[in-house]
Length: 200
Length: 76
Image (tube, rainbow over all chains, first blue to last red; front, top):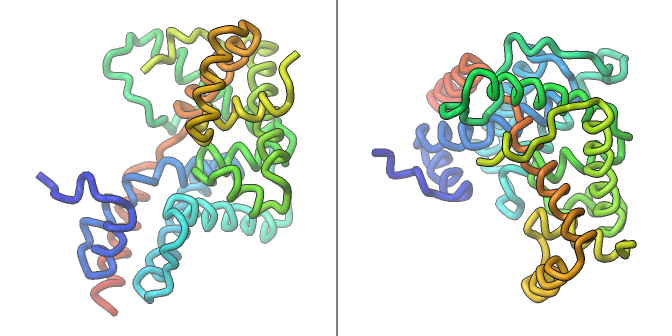
């Protein structure tokens, strides 16, 4: 049994810097989905997102191993910020804007456990999550930004307010509109919205 | 009509950022105000859906990261 299972991110980072590679593996596995989703929602391409995911963690490796990691903030916020910046830089280099495209979902999977689900409910969930990701792309940029920072990068609303130069009430308002708009869009698009399908 | 301040508190509540005393007041209000409770329910449902919408990278990408880390550690 791995003794690192319940360790905090901070403890895992300390172990990793001290040379314990298994601590880093846990850290990566703990945060990979949120980092990947943060990137994917910007670049909308699985292969590009995986490349940038690797770049983000490589940057993190260099920072941690060189002793430049600042332990004041949360690791998840930090690594997701790196990922977000890399994704934005990717579009700047490509000299194009993020495109809203439909995904085929053929080579992706999400992080929910479906072991107890029927094939039909599994398909409904997969379809719903794919459509939801598409709808996130259609939100106004300020709302999408707050949603990604809070929900996937796990930044607090105060951290988001500080990072984006707005008041906490503005950040909360943007999040509220983001969630309300997503709900409206789901209803308008006749997307399955049955709470019984999504209960853990 | 739900006040904006209360709506913002609902968001903080859904994301576990509401202070304990405000949380108690809001939970009491939720038992007495159907419109507020319905709004809260909608927000919680979207919140749960967003959790499910997270995607996972292929294992090969994770293996590449871990391999890089090991080789980097050997070099340094």
